[in-house]
Length: 385
Image (cartoon, rainbow, N blue to C red; front, side, top):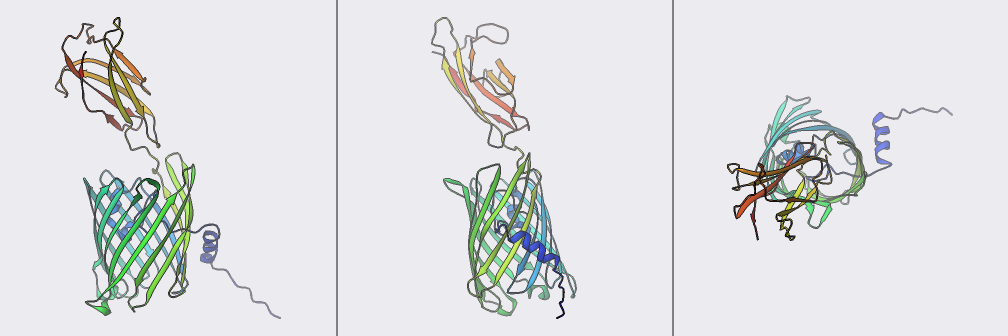
């Protein structure tokens, strides 16, 4: 009996390596804890909220449509701006190239993206826009419109879409976050009739050097043929911290309850400055009058704690001034490097060694960490007993 040898496709090997150990899909939502390089495909407004410069590549195999799709994207952040580039290869159009720009102003975030498609037909352009408002720390409400401009040829493949979403960490549970959204799909063959959809997604992490990340969710929508899809998604991934770098492997699956279709996907993630310390130290000071008659003066109690991702304290300064502003005359300063002492005693003598006899003055503390993040307390009024 003749035996026919079969070559295993490279994509099948990659699929096996990703799917066997892990299952996860943390990048197909508006929230996770380490970066969202694929936001230029979905919600460009949140690109300017990214930490560091996340980069990822992904493959997706859908058993229902029997097709393999590849994508990759990178985000470059600078101050309150972000620029992103992305690429998708799938079925017609075979290739799509994306570019996006996002900026934030106070609690508002805006973004737009442009996609050029290359395939058997003429190249075509589509445009997305989005806006978001920060409602609490790291929590956002977003609205967006995808493919608001485009040729008829491309819109027969990629429909117009309008959405509103809420995402962020769950209150009182800092290691668990959510993404909840409602959207409308507008298909060309159903002009004037919107198709409703929505999803709810949970993303969480463990607190350790090599953190495990889990995600699961439900996505409900009707396609252009009015077929209902009820997709369940979920799984695990791992992120490794190496100095300031975060790198990980994330893969996953979805299962469509309505049609029985399945999808498998995997991600390689890299963020070269994910753990770079960008936050100023946490500082505070309290004042106490000296209780001993032989030590008339003022005790300054100091609290100074750098955050979880810490670059360390570089230097600190305590300033006594006649008025609570830079226009005041400096009475006395204390300063040093590294972590300040817990208490400093001021004998009420000025920089010339003379006793300061005014009834009041003002004091503040300024601390700089090794990444030049600066923290300063508000001016406190000093009143002597």
